[in-house]
Image 1 (cartoon, rainbow over the protein chains, first blue to last red):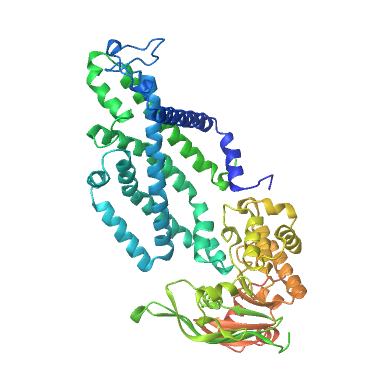
Image 2 (image 1 turned 180 degrees about the vertical axis):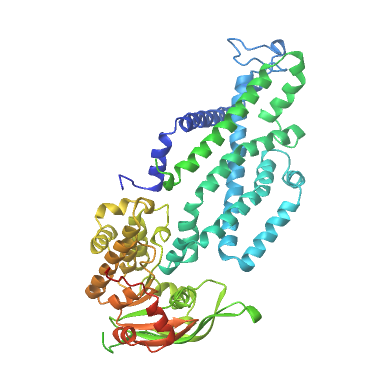
Length: 292
Length: 264
C-alpha cells in the first residue's frame, strides 16, 4: 500500500538508486560532465589570457610518444598530449549533444503534442512540415546551414538541431494520440481542464520516458554526427574534437600508434554506453507502475 | 424529490455519428429534466445511447460526433451553444462526472492527492487544498494517508471513492454517474451505492445515473428513463416503471434480470 511517496521525481530517484548498473552509469555521466565543465573552464581561461593552452602546445620532438608517466595517453603527430585533448573533446561532445537537444527536443515535443492532441488541420500541417524536413537528406541540409552561418560549431548546432526534431515529433505525436483516448484524459476534460493543461501537465508526464530515452539515444548520435562533420571539414575547426582526433589517428594506426585511436574510441564508447543504459534505467524508474 | 426547481432540462437532443449511408443516430431526440435533489436513472442496454447522452450534456462526446439538434438548458443557458472556455467553467464545478472504470480514470503518474488538488486548484482557489483534500477523503470514508498513494496502489473500490471525492470537490449542482459500479465486484458495488446514497442526502445533490442494472435503479433512483436505440421509450417514477412496465422493451429488461429462486 501507500508508503512514504512524495512526488514522481523523488520516487523515481528512490527506484533508480536500487539499480546498480544505472548508478555506475550515472557516475560515468557525472564524471564526463565534470570533465566537460573542467574543459570549458580551461578553454575560457586560456581564451581570456590569450595564451596557447597545453592541449594545443605542439612539440615536434615529442611526436607519437606512447603512454608514459608524463603523457598518460601518449602524444599525437604534433607532439600534443592526447589526454588533455581528449578532455577538450568531451567539452565539444557535450556542447553538441546538449545544445542540439535543446533545439530539437522542444520543437519536436511541441509540434508532436499539438498535432497528436488536436488532430485535423493542425495535425495535417505538422505532418506536412516534418515530411518536408524529412524529405531533405539530413546531410545536405546541415551542409546548407553550415554554408549560411559559416563553418564551425554554430553550423553544427543548428544543422543537427533543426534536422533531428522530426523523429521525436513523430514519436510524441503517436504517443499523444494514444493517450488522448484514455479515460484519464476524458476525466481531466470532464473536470474542466483546458487543452494546454491536459497536454503539458497530464499527458506529457506520462510520456516523459519517451523524451528521456530519446535524449539519451540522440545525444551520442549527435556526437557521432559532429565527429562525421568535423571529419568532412565543416565542423569544429581549431579545437580538439573527437572526430578530428579519430580522423588523425586513423592514418597512423597501421604504423602501430594505437593509443590515440584507442583512448578516443574508448571515451566515445563509454559515453554512449553510459547514456544508453542510464536512459533505459530512467525509463523504468519513471514509471510508477513498475514499482519495486 | 417532488417537482421542485429544475436543475437541468434536455430538450429533443440529437447526437449523430458519420454521414450519409453510415449515419448513426446515437441519440435520437431525447428529452428529460432533473429536479433539484432528484436522482434520475437512464437505463438501457449497451449501445442504446445513454453514455453519449450523458457526455453530451457538457459537449464531451467523442469528436467524431455531431450535435444535430436540441438544447441542454442549465442555469438559464443552452450548454450546447456555449464555447469551450465557458463549458470548462461548468465542467467539474457545476456538473461533474464519475466514470465507469476507476482503474483507468486517474492519471497513472500522479498521486490521488495531487489529482484531487488539481480539481480544487482549478475551480476553488481560495481553499486550503491540503485540508480540503483530507476532508474530501474523509467524506468518502478513506484514510487521509491515501492522498499520497498512486492509482495503481489502490483497489477499484477505493479509486471509485476517490473519483466521487474528486467529483464532489467543487460542490457541483449535478453529478453524472456513468455506470459507476459496473467495473466493480458485487460487494464493492453495494458500498459505493450506499456511499452515493448517503452523500446525495448529505449535500443535496441532483444525480443523473447511467446504468443497465435495474437493481441500482430500484435502490437509488427517484425516476427512470428507459432508453432504446437512442430514444426514450418509457419514463416515470421508479416504482411505477418497475412494477408496471408499459413498454415491451422495459418488460424485456425486467425479464432479463436474473433472479435467485429458493432451492426446493
